[in-house]
Amino acid sequence: MKTVRRYVAPFRQALAAPEPGPAVPKTRQITRWLLTRPDRLRPQEQEQLGQITERCPHIQALAGYVTSFAEMMTGRTGSQDLGAWLTAIEADDGQPDLRSLAAGIRNDQQAVINGLTLPWSSGKVEGTASKIKMIKRQMYGRAASACSANASSCTLRNRTTEFAAEPIYVSET
Image 1 (cartoon, rainbow, N blue to C red):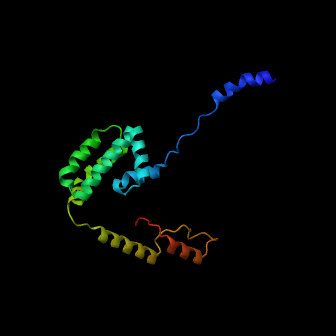
Image 2: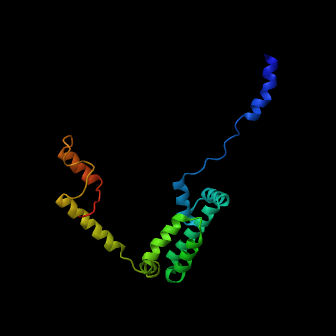
Image 3: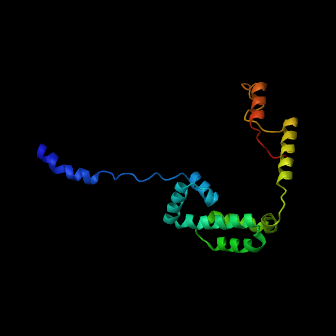
């Protein structure tokens, strides 16, 4: 028995699983790194992102597109650079989600160019309009809640609490 055990031992060691490498970051983490300014990433994060982009050419291309779009936003050069950026994305077969984004931008390209070029924004106005609509819906009882109006187990107190905690928007019909 000992002889067989000694004979089989080297084979078992050869079949043993290799040590696991470093843990792969989650998709959300990689996305955050791609969308953060490189100078604001910690050195360890920069290193991990560099390793990931070296291993995967699709992520490396994506990082390039994200960086160039960020430069357009911060430099307000949309009127000069957006067309070339869209053309590059449409020619890249490895980025189907970005191609979909490019098609959506092409549908309203002038508005996107204005947003990437002009110094003012209507964001504050749009946010205020959305808040007013939400308040009106709540006042008139048309905002949806997690609690059904017909549910017998749900009390009025529970519905009011859910409304105040997190309003859910519905389209007006």
